[in-house]
Length: 198
Image (spheres, rainbow, N blue to C red):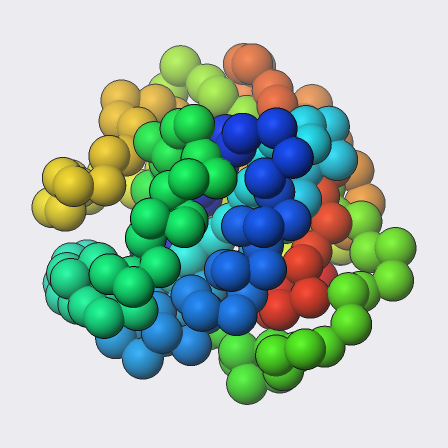
């Protein structure tokens, strides 16, 4: 599986508008064409940031799904409304799980489900000089990812390249000292009402 970690910069006050639109229109419509929407989050450290994760079985599926979704009726109908909320949408990392990962999104909350109560997740991102040969699994980890080497074959959506990244989504803060030295980002995230990862 390949997973995109997508971080959008938003106009002030626009995040709830994007979340409402996304959870209503962009979950099932992406999954109908082969993508898997794994999680949508508010970044507690930045009120004008929206973070989400999207997965694909393989790179061939990724390209087909992106072509179908962004060329399809749902995105065409709602893209102006979505794009009006954003100032930047090109902070994207293409990653792969460290261990085999098969999401069971059948357990995702249904449309109109209440927001989860005080759920807090930690996203730790470590940048290093060399590729990560291993990343220890923490007991509270939900997802552990490292950079994928594959070329982005859907250039309409940019992906950051040339970076060696490990990303750990966990319930408890992850001990980044267990990783090779490098710059570390720590995000505190709360899932939206439709997020599968929570």
